[in-house]
Length: 108
Image 1 (cartoon, rainbow, N blue to C red):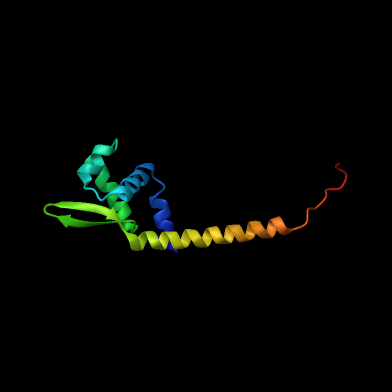
Image 2: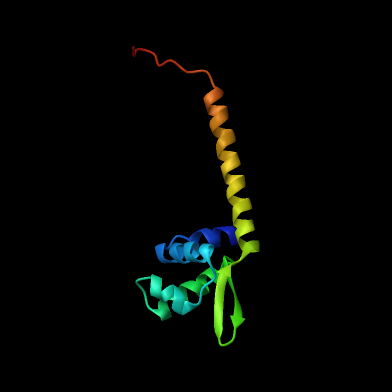
């Protein structure tokens, strides 16, 4: 489970979330991403390193460039974790909603 927590932590940064959103549309190089973000190429590279370490992003080499894309396996593990959390939350909500209302004494 710690891998999924690392992924959630990685997505805690707004710039990294933007990178993930851009990569969801199409694979991109550092230069392509830097053109769309208010940060330097160096900063984009650092953010990509965090996303790669958390297995949300991977890359392939195209000539002399690295082209980054979302990592389907890493995203699947994150999705599985979030689905479990969501399922538990919905189950707990249903149990609470099914409980009879308790009247408080002395209050109308």
